Length: 318
Length: 262
Image 1 (cartoon, rainbow over the protein chains, first blue to last red):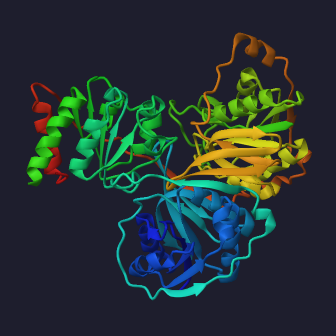
Image 2 (image 1 turned 30 degrees about the vertical axis):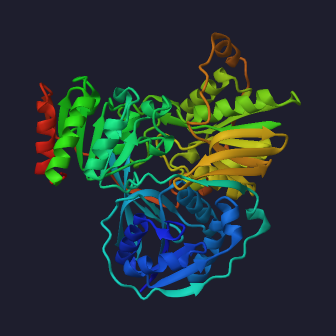
Image 3 (image 1 turned 90 degrees about the horizontal axis):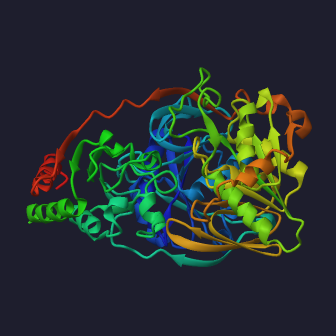
């Protein structure tokens, strides 16, 4: 069977859910091989095996971690040249997309970003993307080289399947030309204890209507085991960090349930959440465009509604 | 110092965006504009120019696209950029990111640039790959998704807020820099700026000027193919209740319970 390379997304060896999703997709297309950058493979091995990696390529070098993007793209291109895989799947985050862009040019291969589905076809792949703020769905294929596809979180439900995870350490040979944008400082983001925003099954987001008080939003999120998001208005006002922004210039989320509290629903926000399965909104303005999207809406004060809903949700858990 | 800002003319996101019969984005029949996210790139370029001590720094705005795309250059000139370059040629219609990055790289090489500046993404395709592809093609450092930029002589230092960490990245010019919407607050064109823009030079160039063959770009040369598009079915209207005396919360929790979320 043909080999499919999957670039592993991990934090210090802790494999992200998106990697399990990519391995699950890769099994539709061929035999998944995980590509692991970094030194913490010991922490990642079981997860990769558990989701069906037949091979694991380990690339560990300070050159990969000390400089931005270019060395990783170069190392991945060398692996693609050596292995001639049938496709390369990469997580659709900022770094993943940039690696994919450079890999596309280096290997003379077509690139599709932000796929929400990948299917095999005629020895190649066909992808589905959600475009124009989720207003349209597009199917596309790669017509030249090795298909390179970046895949959004929640594209598929991860399905476990034991792989043999045969491990091979790959020598890393990075050119001086790729070592020019040096990472001089790295500050890990503080853990919140909540699920990752773009991986969460439930997202509770607050906007201008919170007036800067996110306590009720966070309490409701915690009652549901949800991630917390924020609209651009709330982020621009300095009420919540940019890392939690949902929308065109923040994260695009597609959870099972999206709760918009005090968010009007401008196009910039809709672009980031419109494909959520179930949408709920609480807003004091009955004319807010967000209500055009909702499965259930409450016109009212978000703080009092969420406070009471939090108590009831917790009571039902007991 | 010369700063070349790559900007894109995109369909207005608040309009009803459409596709052409050949599955490309309709850039003519829908009201277009300078991509909102490119305004941050223009603003950053102006800040760098105005902070440059040599006094001879200049900002050149580069775009590609149909005749109407000139509007994206004009807006940038109104904000304060010095001149524009417009790649306009029927053969570029339907270019994918690979073809677009080739044309932009050739145009940058023709101009010569110390800093190539881009926005974090376009508001239509939203791929976010052009800056990385430009750096790859030009063989220069890539410092991208910058939320804060400091230029000191030929050293550029940026803050990049990633998913897992915030990184500080440093590189020397010439380089490709992309900025996020957190990097600055784009200025509105002043009346003076609008008047001055009318006199600023805009050069129109074709594939021949760039030494690119028509067969190397455009829809037929693309390495990807959009096979079909479909409008997403409108969401069916849900129930909307008005909260009276706490009943809103009860109904909300009932709804969530019925869906097994609580």
